[in-house]
Image (cartoon, rainbow, N blue to C red):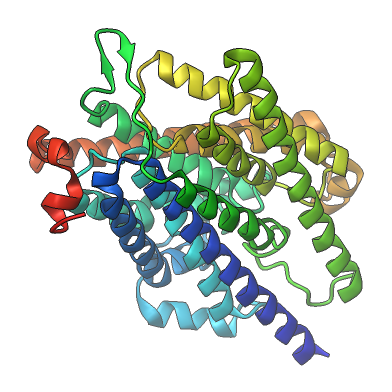
Length: 421
């Protein structure tokens, strides 16, 4: 029986990994389709390289750092682990298939990096971005994962973030916002207090990408109840059938959240502008997924729809606000992942079974306590990512520069960095 359960765990993790790959691929397509044609090869190249960097650093540094410090007395700073030896040591001590778990989380490690690349499109020097990504994945992301999933202080506070609304999406959006503020807008984007629309070269590519992202939500949220921790199918009181039913609920809830987000965004756009912007609708799909990632299995279907709908409304308002303050994000990644992540972490408070949580935590637990934990977690993520990203980016800015020259920006990165469109 143990062997059967182990096999089920392994298969589930591997299938989820493939679906998360679809999220990374879809996000890359949306990013490439949302920029001008002269920079589309740059975006595709950056996304592939960033996915590789994220996986490499996570496999050799991130996983061991996140999950090998459960016995550490220090809840705020992990014991960094490097190399294959430390990783393989966990195979004999963990309660789940470690290699499949590593493979899954390695796919996730590229997502915040691609969020940064999307928001900073057409301006960021490729090599500098890749170096920053190396440090982000090895240091900033690993510490966050330890805090939330690896026995750190946020896990001890019972902070809820099952599939990365905060650790992955909000963190990526905060780092992207810092980078965009340091880079400034693209040339010609905001001139003489007027906004110039710079249309993406291939929105069809963006639509194909967003369908891949939608598909991948099954891998992200359906496994969100246990895939980041040592909670597995082993000895579950629900039994295999009960767990599968729970995963089906998560899938349907995610679908309802996406539907709510898309429809709410359409309605709000019609009210505010009289038209519907396809790029915002693409991001509404992302918001629906991200807003449910914190806790996909706890809302009712109606609750999931409402969570997505609120997320869709907040997305439109955030994009309008960014426009007002001249924050140039060609893809809308900061608004989509930042709003979705922030709202998802707060919405998780409203959908919990506090009788069950009281039993789980072995203390009386209520929504004010959970709200406090969520606010502390949100604040910790934002401050840690903002400060550490700012320090690293300022170092790069003054040592080697982070923005391409005006000449390169005019010609396009494809021609200068990649030998042609």
